[in-house]
Image (tube, rainbow, N blue to C red; front, side, top):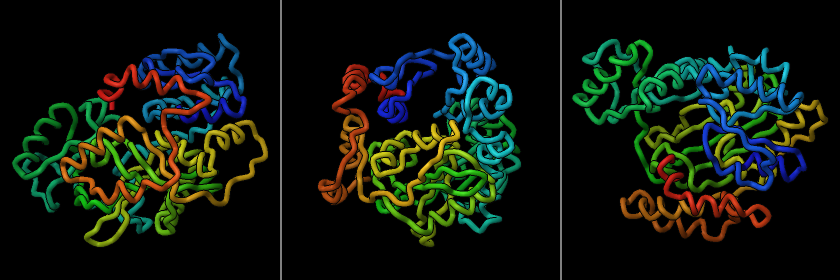
Length: 369
């Protein structure tokens, strides 16, 4: 929805495509809504081609906000380029990003810290990691398709054996790796380094951190804040240069209190849920992407506002109460953010309908989250 509003405020016509009803379709800036096949299905790309031809969408920017859509659009990039303007990178680069094991090995080669990990050959393989640990797919998208989960957590060796036995019924263990879960501390928030890059050269960047999320660890942000972090900027720059990456991206890091290092968690080759905060701080990624796709001269931002807070008033209230009850959030954290400039994720005076639809459909949306 953030990108829909960003385009609409600039007078750029916006169509929303989703697999089902979504908040963005209720924005006054959404001129047309189309329900599409599943993003990972064989029907998705023919659907895009068909609507491009039928509605004469030549030179419209196609901007995905889902990993499965990114992967398929990149895979069929040459075909779709006949109908749309694209900023989704080449499939060779996208594969290096969504193959989590390959991305981790690239980070290690660049001396970017990562959580310890191992590839286990069978369920009873010896493990030299500290529990709790996470088992993931080398290719996160394939793992999710088969397991319907991004990661599987094991709290002890017995649980690990059980989980690996379950996994290998659907996917070979050679297509997975097991990684140490960075111990939770109230101060070590997930940090997102974001950028627009061209051939690995960063044109503009913005950094934010999740103050609240659901689930309460490694989840979707319910409150986030703009920050500055030179160390994360260096790591992000090294990674994008090595990938020769072009487009918008979000790279997540988490500080490990044991050695005080920020460690790479994952990279997304697209915009993210709270991209509206970057826009409010002076980095409008939607406008940059559009101008780049139309070969316009771009005045890339060289700085942005810090200490601005973005929040979803409904999910943030619910998960803040839950976090307080479980001892995951301190009252002092709430107090610290009271005086900061806040960006409401849902309610905008000039575009209120998505907020009211969220209220009406709150139960359904919370279940999806």
